[in-house]
Amino acid sequence: MGGKSVKVVVAGGFGTGKTTFVGAVSEITPLTTEEVLTSASLGVDDLAGIEDKTSTTVALDFGRITVNAAVVLYLFGTPGQDRFWFMWDELAQGAVGAIVLVDTRRLDTSFAAIDFFERRDVPFLVAVNMFYGERLYSEQEIRAALKLNPAVPVVWCDARDRSSAKQTLIGLVQHAMARLPAVARSPI
Image 1 (cartoon, rainbow, N blue to C red):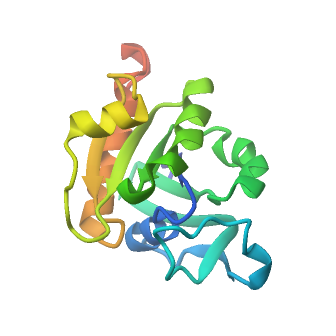
Image 2 (image 1 turned 120 degrees about the horizontal axis):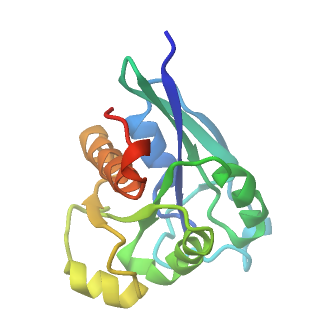
């Protein structure tokens, strides 16, 4: 099978649901580098709003989803804490695009991820993770709070739900393909 491999990055701040998203949509058991939060992270990791969080990604998450016989998406989830951001350049290299997961309880944790992809001109969309199934803010409110470029799509998803995560991936691939020159586009 001579399929096309497509790399997608799932990024965002600490505790936004990246590991959950990769795990929900991956057709293979995802590779995760989750470690238990210890007292060493006190004062380093901001747990405001996510006090129940007990583990964290220290390197990456990796998953795979087959779109069809011609295309396989490889998912790379980034670590969210500032001290691991040195890994983002490597994880993003060669990516067709990125999903920036945001938590409306902690929007400030998303600014660095948005800035990262904007500066590198990597197509991305913002996926508002509805942890409790609530849609508390309008698209306009999210855009204003994150100071998003009008060309950046905003979608709502539940990172725990496979169907929702799939729809988010489809949205990203469509957005990334729309940015390609017409001659470079090929149907998936």
